[in-house]
Image (cartoon, rainbow, N blue to C red; front, side, top):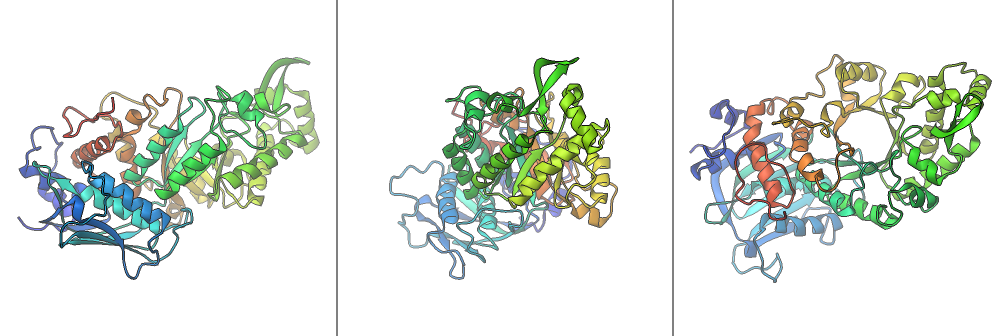
Length: 542
Protein backbone atom coordinates (compact mmCIF):
# COMPACT_ATOMS: atom_id res chain seq x y z
CA UNK A 1 0.00 0.00 0.00
CA UNK A 2 1.50 3.30 -1.05
CA UNK A 3 1.83 6.21 1.36
CA UNK A 4 -0.76 8.92 0.88
CA UNK A 5 0.42 12.47 0.53
CA UNK A 6 -2.51 14.81 0.86
CA UNK A 7 -6.17 14.95 1.74
CA UNK A 8 -7.03 15.88 -1.82
CA UNK A 9 -5.26 12.77 -3.10
CA UNK A 10 -7.18 10.53 -0.74
CA UNK A 11 -10.51 12.05 -1.71
CA UNK A 12 -9.76 11.49 -5.38
CA UNK A 13 -8.97 7.83 -4.82
CA UNK A 14 -11.91 7.18 -2.59
CA UNK A 15 -14.40 8.72 -4.96
CA UNK A 16 -17.78 10.19 -4.13
CA UNK A 17 -20.54 8.64 -2.10
CA UNK A 18 -21.93 8.36 1.40
CA UNK A 19 -20.58 5.83 3.87
CA UNK A 20 -23.09 3.17 4.86
CA UNK A 21 -22.54 1.69 8.32
CA UNK A 22 -21.82 -2.00 8.17
CA UNK A 23 -20.57 -1.92 4.57
CA UNK A 24 -17.05 -0.55 4.96
CA UNK A 25 -16.61 -1.05 8.70
CA UNK A 26 -14.33 -4.03 8.09
CA UNK A 27 -10.90 -4.40 9.65
CA UNK A 28 -9.31 -3.92 6.25
CA UNK A 29 -11.13 -0.60 5.96
CA UNK A 30 -9.84 0.75 9.28
CA UNK A 31 -6.72 2.25 7.72
CA UNK A 32 -8.44 3.36 4.53
CA UNK A 33 -11.19 5.31 6.19
CA UNK A 34 -10.30 5.96 9.80
CA UNK A 35 -6.58 6.18 10.15
CA UNK A 36 -5.55 7.96 7.00
CA UNK A 37 -5.33 11.71 6.66
CA UNK A 38 -9.03 11.82 7.39
CA UNK A 39 -8.52 10.50 10.94
CA UNK A 40 -8.51 13.96 12.55
CA UNK A 41 -11.49 16.28 12.97
CA UNK A 42 -11.36 19.11 12.02
CA UNK A 43 -9.24 18.16 9.03
CA UNK A 44 -5.69 19.57 9.32
CA UNK A 45 -4.44 22.09 6.79
CA UNK A 46 -1.55 19.94 5.56
CA UNK A 47 -0.92 16.30 6.37
CA UNK A 48 1.23 13.49 5.08
CA UNK A 49 0.71 10.00 6.42
CA UNK A 50 1.75 6.42 5.79
CA UNK A 51 0.52 2.89 6.49
CA UNK A 52 3.70 2.35 8.54
CA UNK A 53 2.42 2.01 12.08
CA UNK A 54 3.91 1.86 15.55
CA UNK A 55 2.53 0.05 18.61
CA UNK A 56 1.79 2.04 21.75
CA UNK A 57 1.83 0.68 25.29
CA UNK A 58 0.22 2.64 28.08
CA UNK A 59 2.97 1.60 30.49
CA UNK A 60 5.72 2.76 28.15
CA UNK A 61 4.30 6.03 26.94
CA UNK A 62 5.50 9.46 27.96
CA UNK A 63 4.65 13.13 27.37
CA UNK A 64 7.66 15.37 27.81
CA UNK A 65 9.09 18.81 27.14
CA UNK A 66 11.57 19.41 24.33
CA UNK A 67 15.02 20.69 25.24
CA UNK A 68 14.47 23.91 23.31
CA UNK A 69 10.99 24.51 24.67
CA UNK A 70 10.35 27.85 26.35
CA UNK A 71 7.83 26.09 28.58
CA UNK A 72 9.28 23.70 31.17
CA UNK A 73 7.87 21.13 33.62
CA UNK A 74 5.50 22.93 35.94
CA UNK A 75 3.70 24.65 33.06
CA UNK A 76 0.10 24.50 34.24
CA UNK A 77 -1.47 24.28 30.78
CA UNK A 78 0.78 21.55 29.40
CA UNK A 79 1.09 19.52 32.61
CA UNK A 80 -2.70 19.36 32.80
CA UNK A 81 -2.94 18.54 29.09
CA UNK A 82 -0.50 15.64 29.42
CA UNK A 83 -2.61 14.07 32.18
CA UNK A 84 -5.86 14.59 30.29
CA UNK A 85 -4.63 13.20 27.02
CA UNK A 86 -3.05 10.14 28.55
CA UNK A 87 -6.48 9.22 29.93
CA UNK A 88 -8.20 10.07 26.65
CA UNK A 89 -5.78 7.99 24.58
CA UNK A 90 -5.62 4.97 26.88
CA UNK A 91 -9.17 4.89 28.16
CA UNK A 92 -8.98 1.28 29.29
CA UNK A 93 -5.81 1.80 31.32
CA UNK A 94 -6.62 1.03 34.97
CA UNK A 95 -3.23 0.68 36.67
CA UNK A 96 -2.87 2.67 39.85
CA UNK A 97 0.80 3.38 39.16
CA UNK A 98 0.08 6.44 37.06
CA UNK A 99 0.50 7.25 33.39
CA UNK A 100 4.26 7.89 33.39
CA UNK A 101 5.46 4.48 34.61
CA UNK A 102 7.90 2.59 32.40
CA UNK A 103 8.51 -1.13 32.08
CA UNK A 104 10.12 -1.26 28.65
CA UNK A 105 13.49 -0.07 27.42
CA UNK A 106 12.09 1.91 24.50
CA UNK A 107 9.03 3.92 25.47
CA UNK A 108 7.10 6.01 22.99
CA UNK A 109 7.64 9.69 23.75
CA UNK A 110 5.54 12.67 22.70
CA UNK A 111 7.97 15.58 22.95
CA UNK A 112 6.35 19.02 23.10
CA UNK A 113 8.16 22.29 22.43
CA UNK A 114 6.73 25.80 22.40
CA UNK A 115 8.35 29.09 21.45
CA UNK A 116 6.73 31.19 24.17
CA UNK A 117 6.26 30.55 27.87
CA UNK A 118 2.62 31.60 28.13
CA UNK A 119 1.81 28.86 30.63
CA UNK A 120 0.10 31.06 33.19
CA UNK A 121 -1.67 33.44 30.82
CA UNK A 122 -5.09 33.29 29.20
CA UNK A 123 -5.71 32.69 25.52
CA UNK A 124 -6.62 35.87 23.66
CA UNK A 125 -7.63 37.09 20.22
CA UNK A 126 -4.02 37.15 19.02
CA UNK A 127 -2.97 33.75 20.39
CA UNK A 128 -1.38 31.52 17.77
CA UNK A 129 -2.82 28.02 17.54
CA UNK A 130 -0.49 26.79 14.83
CA UNK A 131 1.37 23.54 15.45
CA UNK A 132 3.54 21.01 13.66
CA UNK A 133 3.26 17.33 14.53
CA UNK A 134 5.67 14.64 13.36
CA UNK A 135 5.05 11.00 14.29
CA UNK A 136 7.82 8.47 13.68
CA UNK A 137 9.17 5.30 15.25
CA UNK A 138 9.25 5.63 19.03
CA UNK A 139 8.59 9.34 19.05
CA UNK A 140 6.22 12.14 18.19
CA UNK A 141 7.51 15.70 18.02
CA UNK A 142 5.00 18.49 18.56
CA UNK A 143 6.16 22.06 17.99
CA UNK A 144 4.02 25.16 18.44
CA UNK A 145 4.44 28.88 18.96
CA UNK A 146 2.27 28.85 22.08
CA UNK A 147 0.90 26.39 24.60
CA UNK A 148 -2.51 26.88 22.97
CA UNK A 149 -1.15 25.55 19.69
CA UNK A 150 0.40 22.65 21.58
CA UNK A 151 -2.99 21.79 23.09
CA UNK A 152 -4.51 21.72 19.59
CA UNK A 153 -1.69 19.45 18.44
CA UNK A 154 -2.21 17.09 21.36
CA UNK A 155 -5.85 16.77 20.36
CA UNK A 156 -4.83 15.84 16.83
CA UNK A 157 -2.33 13.28 18.11
CA UNK A 158 -4.96 11.72 20.36
CA UNK A 159 -7.28 11.28 17.38
CA UNK A 160 -4.51 9.57 15.37
CA UNK A 161 -4.19 6.81 17.96
CA UNK A 162 -6.41 3.81 17.26
CA UNK A 163 -6.97 0.23 18.38
CA UNK A 164 -7.04 -2.89 16.25
CA UNK A 165 -9.65 -5.62 16.60
CA UNK A 166 -7.69 -7.12 19.52
CA UNK A 167 -7.53 -3.86 21.49
CA UNK A 168 -3.86 -3.08 20.80
CA UNK A 169 -2.98 0.59 20.32
CA UNK A 170 -1.24 1.98 17.25
CA UNK A 171 -0.33 5.24 15.61
CA UNK A 172 0.81 5.67 12.02
CA UNK A 173 3.74 7.62 10.63
CA UNK A 174 2.34 11.12 10.12
CA UNK A 175 3.38 14.71 9.43
CA UNK A 176 0.93 17.53 10.13
CA UNK A 177 1.29 21.28 9.72
CA UNK A 178 -1.90 22.86 10.97
CA UNK A 179 -3.49 26.15 11.92
CA UNK A 180 -7.05 27.52 12.07
CA UNK A 181 -8.62 29.27 9.12
CA UNK A 182 -10.40 31.71 11.47
CA UNK A 183 -9.18 32.89 14.85
CA UNK A 184 -12.67 33.17 16.42
CA UNK A 185 -14.50 29.83 16.60
CA UNK A 186 -17.26 29.99 19.16
CA UNK A 187 -20.06 28.14 20.88
CA UNK A 188 -22.92 30.10 22.48
CA UNK A 189 -24.76 28.67 25.45
CA UNK A 190 -27.86 30.35 26.87
CA UNK A 191 -28.09 29.89 30.66
CA UNK A 192 -31.04 32.20 31.26
CA UNK A 193 -33.92 30.44 29.54
CA UNK A 194 -32.86 27.22 31.21
CA UNK A 195 -30.23 27.04 33.92
CA UNK A 196 -27.33 24.76 32.94
CA UNK A 197 -25.40 23.18 35.82
CA UNK A 198 -21.71 23.97 35.94
CA UNK A 199 -20.91 20.31 35.21
CA UNK A 200 -22.84 20.55 31.93
CA UNK A 201 -20.88 23.67 30.97
CA UNK A 202 -17.56 22.00 31.81
CA UNK A 203 -18.42 18.98 29.69
CA UNK A 204 -19.35 21.34 26.86
CA UNK A 205 -15.91 22.93 27.15
CA UNK A 206 -14.33 19.48 26.89
CA UNK A 207 -16.28 18.68 23.74
CA UNK A 208 -15.47 22.11 22.31
CA UNK A 209 -11.76 21.37 22.66
CA UNK A 210 -12.18 18.02 20.91
CA UNK A 211 -13.52 20.01 17.92
CA UNK A 212 -10.93 22.80 18.38
CA UNK A 213 -13.44 25.53 19.23
CA UNK A 214 -11.70 28.33 21.13
CA UNK A 215 -14.42 30.75 22.34
CA UNK A 216 -17.19 30.10 24.85
CA UNK A 217 -19.80 32.84 24.43
CA UNK A 218 -21.67 32.73 27.71
CA UNK A 219 -25.11 34.29 27.23
CA UNK A 220 -25.43 34.22 30.97
CA UNK A 221 -28.53 36.39 31.64
CA UNK A 222 -31.69 37.37 29.75
CA UNK A 223 -35.39 38.09 30.30
CA UNK A 224 -36.31 34.79 32.02
CA UNK A 225 -33.62 34.71 34.72
CA UNK A 226 -30.49 36.38 36.05
CA UNK A 227 -28.34 33.50 37.37
CA UNK A 228 -25.06 35.44 37.61
CA UNK A 229 -24.43 36.20 41.29
CA UNK A 230 -23.02 39.70 41.39
CA UNK A 231 -20.93 40.63 44.40
CA UNK A 232 -21.80 44.29 43.82
CA UNK A 233 -25.54 43.80 43.25
CA UNK A 234 -26.51 40.51 44.95
CA UNK A 235 -30.25 41.21 44.54
CA UNK A 236 -29.92 40.70 40.78
CA UNK A 237 -29.66 36.95 41.27
CA UNK A 238 -31.42 36.60 44.62
CA UNK A 239 -34.53 38.12 43.05
CA UNK A 240 -33.94 37.52 39.35
CA UNK A 241 -32.77 33.89 39.21
CA UNK A 242 -35.17 30.96 38.95
CA UNK A 243 -33.99 30.03 42.45
CA UNK A 244 -31.65 32.16 44.57
CA UNK A 245 -29.61 29.20 45.83
CA UNK A 246 -29.79 26.33 43.34
CA UNK A 247 -30.03 28.14 40.01
CA UNK A 248 -27.20 30.65 40.23
CA UNK A 249 -23.56 30.90 39.20
CA UNK A 250 -21.51 32.01 42.17
CA UNK A 251 -18.24 33.83 41.77
CA UNK A 252 -16.56 30.51 42.51
CA UNK A 253 -18.59 28.79 39.78
CA UNK A 254 -17.56 31.42 37.25
CA UNK A 255 -13.90 31.11 38.22
CA UNK A 256 -14.18 27.34 37.85
CA UNK A 257 -15.57 27.67 34.31
CA UNK A 258 -12.90 30.20 33.31
CA UNK A 259 -10.11 28.08 34.79
CA UNK A 260 -11.35 24.93 33.06
CA UNK A 261 -11.66 26.76 29.76
CA UNK A 262 -8.15 28.23 30.05
CA UNK A 263 -6.56 24.80 30.33
CA UNK A 264 -8.26 23.85 27.06
CA UNK A 265 -7.19 27.11 25.35
CA UNK A 266 -10.75 28.43 25.32
CA UNK A 267 -11.66 32.07 25.88
CA UNK A 268 -14.76 32.88 27.96
CA UNK A 269 -16.70 35.91 26.71
CA UNK A 270 -19.72 36.89 28.83
CA UNK A 271 -22.78 38.58 27.42
CA UNK A 272 -24.86 41.02 29.44
CA UNK A 273 -27.43 41.99 26.81
CA UNK A 274 -29.23 45.33 27.17
CA UNK A 275 -31.29 47.50 26.88
CA UNK A 276 -33.74 44.77 25.81
CA UNK A 277 -33.83 41.22 27.18
CA UNK A 278 -33.57 42.63 30.71
CA UNK A 279 -36.84 41.75 32.45
CA UNK A 280 -35.02 39.64 35.06
CA UNK A 281 -32.68 42.54 35.84
CA UNK A 282 -35.54 44.74 36.99
CA UNK A 283 -36.56 42.33 39.74
CA UNK A 284 -33.40 43.06 41.68
CA UNK A 285 -32.56 46.60 40.60
CA UNK A 286 -35.25 49.23 41.26
CA UNK A 287 -35.77 51.96 38.65
CA UNK A 288 -33.57 50.21 36.08
CA UNK A 289 -36.37 49.33 33.66
CA UNK A 290 -38.66 51.82 31.92
CA UNK A 291 -42.19 52.08 33.38
CA UNK A 292 -44.77 51.55 30.65
CA UNK A 293 -47.81 53.79 30.48
CA UNK A 294 -51.37 53.29 29.43
CA UNK A 295 -52.48 56.76 28.48
CA UNK A 296 -51.34 59.11 31.25
CA UNK A 297 -50.97 56.51 34.01
CA UNK A 298 -48.41 53.73 34.60
CA UNK A 299 -49.67 50.32 33.47
CA UNK A 300 -47.68 48.38 36.06
CA UNK A 301 -45.50 46.75 33.43
CA UNK A 302 -41.93 47.53 32.46
CA UNK A 303 -39.99 47.67 29.22
CA UNK A 304 -36.29 47.90 28.31
CA UNK A 305 -33.65 49.54 30.47
CA UNK A 306 -34.52 53.19 31.13
CA UNK A 307 -32.04 55.19 29.00
CA UNK A 308 -32.88 58.63 30.41
CA UNK A 309 -31.86 58.27 34.07
CA UNK A 310 -28.29 59.00 35.29
CA UNK A 311 -28.76 56.17 37.80
CA UNK A 312 -28.92 53.70 34.90
CA UNK A 313 -25.39 54.52 33.79
CA UNK A 314 -24.10 54.61 37.34
CA UNK A 315 -25.45 51.10 37.83
CA UNK A 316 -24.01 49.86 34.53
CA UNK A 317 -20.60 51.36 35.32
CA UNK A 318 -20.41 49.47 38.61
CA UNK A 319 -21.75 46.22 37.15
CA UNK A 320 -19.39 46.18 34.17
CA UNK A 321 -16.45 47.13 36.37
CA UNK A 322 -17.16 43.96 38.35
CA UNK A 323 -17.75 41.85 35.24
CA UNK A 324 -14.50 43.11 33.72
CA UNK A 325 -12.56 42.04 36.79
CA UNK A 326 -14.23 38.61 36.95
CA UNK A 327 -13.87 37.74 33.25
CA UNK A 328 -10.26 38.21 32.11
CA UNK A 329 -10.89 38.17 28.35
CA UNK A 330 -10.50 41.47 26.53
CA UNK A 331 -13.89 41.00 24.84
CA UNK A 332 -17.30 41.56 26.38
CA UNK A 333 -20.62 41.12 24.60
CA UNK A 334 -23.08 43.97 25.15
CA UNK A 335 -26.04 42.64 23.15
CA UNK A 336 -28.15 45.48 21.77
CA UNK A 337 -30.64 43.38 19.80
CA UNK A 338 -34.43 43.21 19.50
CA UNK A 339 -35.37 46.32 21.47
CA UNK A 340 -39.13 46.91 21.61
CA UNK A 341 -39.79 50.65 21.53
CA UNK A 342 -43.43 50.38 22.64
CA UNK A 343 -42.75 51.09 26.30
CA UNK A 344 -40.34 53.93 25.57
CA UNK A 345 -42.95 55.51 23.32
CA UNK A 346 -45.56 55.32 26.07
CA UNK A 347 -43.40 56.96 28.76
CA UNK A 348 -43.71 60.76 29.03
CA UNK A 349 -40.29 61.16 30.68
CA UNK A 350 -38.62 59.31 27.83
CA UNK A 351 -40.41 61.43 25.25
CA UNK A 352 -39.41 64.62 27.06
CA UNK A 353 -35.78 63.49 27.18
CA UNK A 354 -35.83 62.83 23.45
CA UNK A 355 -37.10 66.30 22.72
CA UNK A 356 -34.41 67.77 24.96
CA UNK A 357 -31.71 65.77 23.11
CA UNK A 358 -33.08 66.71 19.70
CA UNK A 359 -33.99 63.14 18.81
CA UNK A 360 -37.53 64.10 17.84
CA UNK A 361 -39.55 60.90 17.53
CA UNK A 362 -36.63 58.74 16.34
CA UNK A 363 -36.25 56.01 18.93
CA UNK A 364 -33.35 54.49 17.03
CA UNK A 365 -31.37 57.60 18.02
CA UNK A 366 -32.32 57.00 21.64
CA UNK A 367 -31.12 53.41 21.43
CA UNK A 368 -27.89 54.60 19.78
CA UNK A 369 -27.41 57.08 22.63
CA UNK A 370 -27.81 54.28 25.16
CA UNK A 371 -25.49 51.82 23.40
CA UNK A 372 -22.84 54.47 22.83
CA UNK A 373 -22.88 55.18 26.57
CA UNK A 374 -22.51 51.48 27.43
CA UNK A 375 -19.71 50.98 24.89
CA UNK A 376 -17.89 53.97 26.38
CA UNK A 377 -18.20 52.41 29.83
CA UNK A 378 -16.62 49.15 28.74
CA UNK A 379 -14.01 50.89 26.59
CA UNK A 380 -12.86 52.77 29.67
CA UNK A 381 -12.32 49.35 31.25
CA UNK A 382 -10.09 48.34 28.30
CA UNK A 383 -12.64 45.92 26.91
CA UNK A 384 -13.44 45.35 23.25
CA UNK A 385 -17.18 45.34 22.68
CA UNK A 386 -19.12 42.79 20.67
CA UNK A 387 -22.68 43.75 19.77
CA UNK A 388 -25.41 42.15 17.72
CA UNK A 389 -25.78 43.43 14.16
CA UNK A 390 -28.86 45.46 15.11
CA UNK A 391 -26.56 48.10 16.61
CA UNK A 392 -24.89 48.75 13.25
CA UNK A 393 -28.29 49.42 11.69
CA UNK A 394 -28.95 52.48 13.81
CA UNK A 395 -25.60 53.56 15.28
CA UNK A 396 -23.73 55.84 12.91
CA UNK A 397 -20.81 56.44 15.28
CA UNK A 398 -20.09 52.93 16.47
CA UNK A 399 -16.36 52.65 17.37
CA UNK A 400 -14.28 50.95 14.69
CA UNK A 401 -12.84 48.37 17.08
CA UNK A 402 -16.34 47.08 17.91
CA UNK A 403 -17.10 43.58 16.60
CA UNK A 404 -20.48 43.08 14.91
CA UNK A 405 -22.21 39.76 15.49
CA UNK A 406 -24.35 38.71 12.51
CA UNK A 407 -27.32 36.65 13.66
CA UNK A 408 -30.25 37.33 11.33
CA UNK A 409 -30.87 34.21 9.30
CA UNK A 410 -31.90 35.66 5.97
CA UNK A 411 -29.57 37.75 3.89
CA UNK A 412 -26.49 37.28 6.01
CA UNK A 413 -24.26 37.42 2.92
CA UNK A 414 -25.58 40.90 2.17
CA UNK A 415 -24.98 41.86 5.80
CA UNK A 416 -21.40 40.60 5.58
CA UNK A 417 -20.86 42.77 2.51
CA UNK A 418 -22.52 45.83 3.99
CA UNK A 419 -20.85 45.74 7.41
CA UNK A 420 -17.33 44.89 6.23
CA UNK A 421 -17.58 47.61 3.59
CA UNK A 422 -17.89 50.03 6.50
CA UNK A 423 -14.61 48.65 7.86
CA UNK A 424 -16.14 46.76 10.78
CA UNK A 425 -15.00 43.35 12.00
CA UNK A 426 -17.66 40.66 12.11
CA UNK A 427 -18.42 37.27 13.63
CA UNK A 428 -20.89 35.13 11.66
CA UNK A 429 -23.51 33.16 13.56
CA UNK A 430 -26.63 33.37 11.38
CA UNK A 431 -26.26 30.04 9.52
CA UNK A 432 -25.26 28.12 12.66
CA UNK A 433 -28.28 28.58 14.91
CA UNK A 434 -28.45 24.88 15.62
CA UNK A 435 -31.11 25.25 18.30
CA UNK A 436 -33.32 24.96 15.19
CA UNK A 437 -33.58 21.26 14.42
CA UNK A 438 -34.91 19.24 11.51
CA UNK A 439 -35.49 15.58 10.85
CA UNK A 440 -32.49 13.84 9.34
CA UNK A 441 -28.94 15.01 8.86
CA UNK A 442 -29.38 18.73 9.32
CA UNK A 443 -25.65 19.08 10.05
CA UNK A 444 -25.14 18.98 6.29
CA UNK A 445 -26.59 22.46 5.91
CA UNK A 446 -24.15 23.79 8.51
CA UNK A 447 -21.26 22.09 6.78
CA UNK A 448 -21.93 23.75 3.42
CA UNK A 449 -21.67 27.31 4.84
CA UNK A 450 -18.81 29.29 3.35
CA UNK A 451 -18.23 32.36 5.57
CA UNK A 452 -16.28 34.26 2.91
CA UNK A 453 -18.69 33.56 0.06
CA UNK A 454 -20.03 37.09 -0.18
CA UNK A 455 -19.52 40.09 -2.42
CA UNK A 456 -16.55 42.01 -1.14
CA UNK A 457 -12.86 42.77 -1.55
CA UNK A 458 -10.04 40.75 -0.02
CA UNK A 459 -9.68 43.48 2.58
CA UNK A 460 -13.33 43.13 3.49
CA UNK A 461 -13.02 39.39 3.88
CA UNK A 462 -10.11 39.81 6.28
CA UNK A 463 -12.58 41.55 8.59
CA UNK A 464 -14.51 38.30 9.08
CA UNK A 465 -12.66 37.11 12.18
CA UNK A 466 -14.68 33.92 12.54
CA UNK A 467 -17.99 32.38 13.39
CA UNK A 468 -20.10 30.94 16.14
CA UNK A 469 -22.45 28.02 16.65
CA UNK A 470 -25.39 29.14 18.79
CA UNK A 471 -27.47 26.92 21.05
CA UNK A 472 -30.30 29.05 22.42
CA UNK A 473 -32.09 27.66 25.42
CA UNK A 474 -35.84 27.88 24.89
CA UNK A 475 -36.07 24.11 24.50
CA UNK A 476 -32.68 23.04 25.85
CA UNK A 477 -31.52 22.21 29.35
CA UNK A 478 -29.01 19.75 30.77
CA UNK A 479 -31.14 16.76 29.72
CA UNK A 480 -30.76 17.35 26.00
CA UNK A 481 -27.95 19.89 25.62
CA UNK A 482 -25.18 17.56 24.50
CA UNK A 483 -27.17 15.30 22.15
CA UNK A 484 -28.55 18.38 20.42
CA UNK A 485 -25.19 20.15 20.31
CA UNK A 486 -22.93 17.28 19.26
CA UNK A 487 -21.85 16.29 16.69
CA UNK A 488 -23.92 18.89 14.82
CA UNK A 489 -21.74 21.74 16.11
CA UNK A 490 -18.65 19.91 14.87
CA UNK A 491 -19.74 20.56 11.28
CA UNK A 492 -19.29 24.27 11.93
CA UNK A 493 -16.02 23.57 13.71
CA UNK A 494 -14.47 22.07 10.59
CA UNK A 495 -15.80 24.89 8.46
CA UNK A 496 -14.09 27.42 10.74
CA UNK A 497 -10.80 25.53 11.11
CA UNK A 498 -10.08 23.63 7.91
CA UNK A 499 -9.20 24.54 4.33
CA UNK A 500 -12.32 25.32 2.33
CA UNK A 501 -11.31 23.34 -0.76
CA UNK A 502 -10.24 20.19 1.05
CA UNK A 503 -13.51 20.04 2.98
CA UNK A 504 -15.93 20.91 0.20
CA UNK A 505 -17.70 17.53 0.01
CA UNK A 506 -20.48 16.79 2.49
CA UNK A 507 -20.61 13.15 1.41
CA UNK A 508 -16.93 12.66 2.12
CA UNK A 509 -17.29 14.40 5.45
CA UNK A 510 -20.07 12.02 6.53
CA UNK A 511 -17.98 8.92 7.41
CA UNK A 512 -15.37 11.10 9.06
CA UNK A 513 -17.95 12.88 11.20
CA UNK A 514 -19.53 9.53 12.00
CA UNK A 515 -16.18 8.30 13.32
CA UNK A 516 -15.66 11.54 15.23
CA UNK A 517 -19.10 11.15 16.78
CA UNK A 518 -18.05 7.72 18.04
CA UNK A 519 -14.90 9.27 19.51
CA UNK A 520 -17.07 11.80 21.35
CA UNK A 521 -19.29 9.01 22.64
CA UNK A 522 -16.31 7.04 23.91
CA UNK A 523 -15.11 10.17 25.69
CA UNK A 524 -18.40 10.46 27.53
CA UNK A 525 -20.15 13.05 25.34
CA UNK A 526 -23.77 12.13 24.62
CA UNK A 527 -23.45 12.95 20.93
CA UNK A 528 -26.47 11.92 18.91
CA UNK A 529 -26.14 9.45 15.99
CA UNK A 530 -25.92 10.72 12.44
CA UNK A 531 -27.65 7.73 10.88
CA UNK A 532 -28.24 4.00 11.25
CA UNK A 533 -25.28 2.08 12.68
CA UNK A 534 -23.34 1.66 15.89
CA UNK A 535 -20.15 2.66 17.66
CA UNK A 536 -17.71 0.07 18.94
CA UNK A 537 -17.89 1.78 22.30
CA UNK A 538 -21.52 2.71 22.89
CA UNK A 539 -22.39 5.37 25.44
CA UNK A 540 -22.57 3.80 28.90
CA UNK A 541 -23.79 6.74 30.97
CA UNK A 542 -27.52 6.42 30.29
